[in-house]
Image (tube, rainbow, N blue to C red; front, side, top):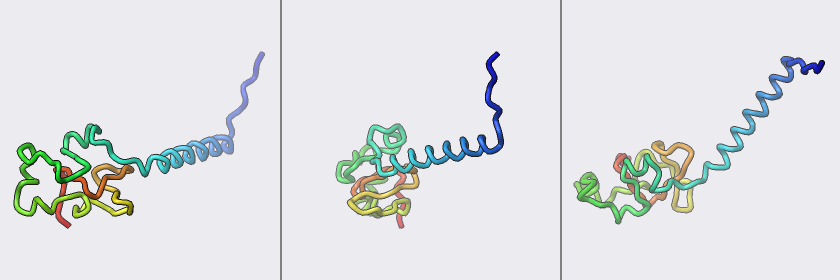
Length: 108
């Protein structure tokens, strides 16, 4: 008869700690990934990597007053990380280009 090892509290804590460390490392590894314009959320919000290319017929918010100054770098949801990209509250864990735009743009 084959015996199975007993699960101890120490063993459970070790396994749980290893799992949490693995998840944290995986999240850090993808933190600098740029949002793809093909991402479902990006598509729904009209995200583009260059604000000058926004289809203003489809996204009239960009065509409105002050629209020429709307880009990710001037949005209140954007956090500059350098190198022309930064974090965005709409896309947690990913970066957007500072020159980009989406319909979630909100003045600082």
